[in-house]
Length: 192
Image 1 (cartoon, rainbow, N blue to C red):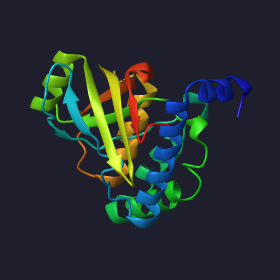
Image 2: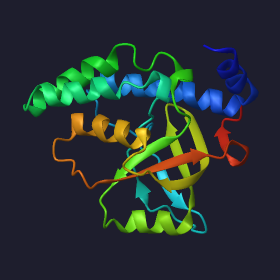
Image 3: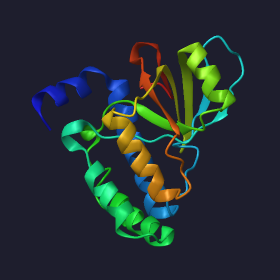
């Protein structure tokens, strides 16, 4: 871990706790749940200005550019046309050491949406939301900026290939949204 990364994580205990928790729960999802998402990675989404959530989304936690594994994900996806083989290879890959180093992750979450999704339209209009993660006796309410990731964005590409390994029907026109936590407006329960 670089000194800059260490400093960033230690300066923000909430970010540090959340990223470590997410790495641990995502490892559990891969190792014990066969890759099936649970509430730990499927937060409730409440657009800014709304009192009620619009539902759950499945989030991805992409890595920073210098720790990216997108070429490996692309290789796994293109190596076979059999979705079951792809899924097994992905489970093996993500179960190994992918989630071992929280400092390798970009610090934002991503999710896929159908282009005509009403939830996507609400999030775009609101420009901010709260993601509520609640599982394993922890709760994190993350206030986030919402932004559409362009096709050229490496985080979009990483998310698309990650999800394609688990969903062979993922459309190339899928919209991918980034959720950038505003740590000063976010909370953990129980408090840190």
